[in-house]
Figure 1 (cartoon, rainbow, N blue to C red):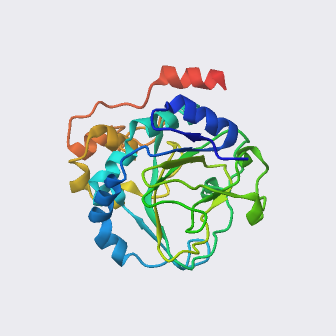
Figure 2: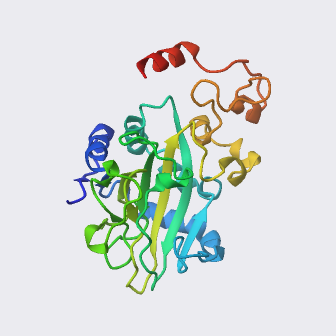
Length: 285
């Protein structure tokens, strides 16, 4: 099964429909490749000093550089890209809100072996979420061209509705080949893994993922982005990072204050979320 592909003028609804059916999709050339020249310029000092992975899963010849919101203005644009947020909003619409889950540049170095095929949602302590209930919507932006030879992410299309704890052979996977500036979408339930790099250059991808707001974030945004940096960020980005109430009664500060008001030192309206909305969602379930 081929990975569904779209052009940059597609809609979030179309991409989300492909994710619902196949668990993955690629939007080719969504941004100008030169944008990733800026990303590399902003992140180069951090990329240089990121250590290689400690084990076979994270990759002994792979670097994973996080904290992208604090370190890269351009990556903030990728986090807030309208098509991405529209798509995520549809995929995760069964939850009251969603939030940023992690930001990371993954640099798969020459000679790296293929990563074990897995589901990203296993990060939640391997909890067996019901089939069809997606808790994550993930993106990997091609910072450099992705090919089958240089470690392009390998996917098992349509595997997001299969049983848990399955194993797959290399020939059952398809490489997400795409030019720089493209973005791969996949759900947290899709079986996938980083590919082996048989080339002479590292493969760079910007991994930005989103999850329902009632689950713990993989990357701790409150420490990854110092408060003095966070206070200068746009409010929509801050709320996406987690400075917002999730569901009805999650994430408030001390006497039920809004976390964004606390961060910015503003007078805060005391209270929880929308009880009417919470009751309605409870009835629907």
